Image 1 (cartoon, rainbow, N blue to C red):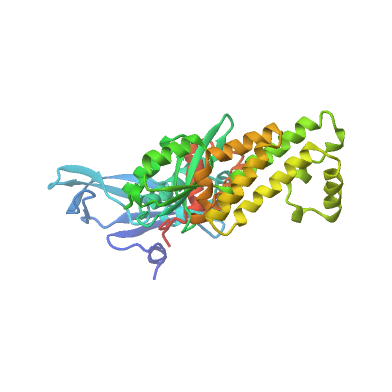
Image 2: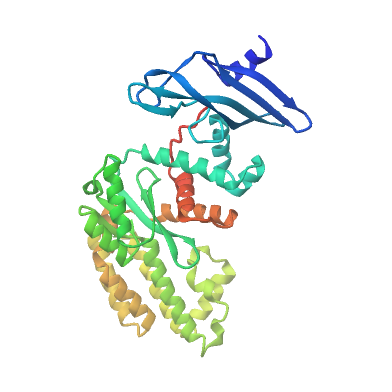
Length: 404
């Protein structure tokens, strides 16, 4: 086997393609492999597949996997064919690269492997290419994988938003809570995001009516979108968002009281942390503070009591408990606590649905943290489309179909 045959075998070339010549420069740390085809060869028409003769050729170049520490490039005369059946002149596809890409398929597989482990800018610096080329590769494979998804079995959904950039810009994320995967991402956080999700379901083998349970926060936009576009979905308001509302009310009581009682300075962490997560010294301090007749201490007890709601055995017991808690909260004479209780009352049914669905957006919060961490490492993304692509890559469990 001569040098040309060896490289042809390594590249997996088959007739009519062959390696014509190989140029190596140790000074430039570069290997150039020139590929050609046998004179008189026919190629399938890219439109109809009929074998056709070459009409003319164009010189193209692709970056390939490094040859040891040397950058490798493939060069080829790529023919265009004049098809007599469909009356078109088209450039043929080459087996080592996809149309329009400046990388070989194997090089793109390397780029995608790196993109899942490090920021895109770092990938671009490592391979010596502009990051826009890396983003183009990533978008191609993510779009292709997203288009192939089957969403016919999606029945339990969680929805949340994540910040895409400063200035109240958001991306809404829809997760299949049964399969623990991101199934849809779109810009914005209004009611139309749910409409887009319902349409995406239909485009991928599902229907809006198949969604039986959905977990979300108490966003009026999400609620309206779900009621309008997911008619069979039972809404469960997420327990973590409910707890956050009560926590914020406790903190607001503390902020108001600290003006006249400086003993509350530097105690925010104590009031908002579950007792089991406090040290012995911290628990002793909060016990002493609770004996001072503070409004914040009363709000704190109401907060702790609310957490017991989620431990009740069934809906009837939960509703009975919630009624008692609501009466206590609304008669506490603590305005922030009263407002929090009224918010909970306004979403009564969706809160009680916890006992039938037992679903939360905790999974979403975890993935949201991963997405935001990736964004922070990358120092932000230039567009919402880039953030959406990375979200699918991190949480979509996509079959990227990378070449091997």
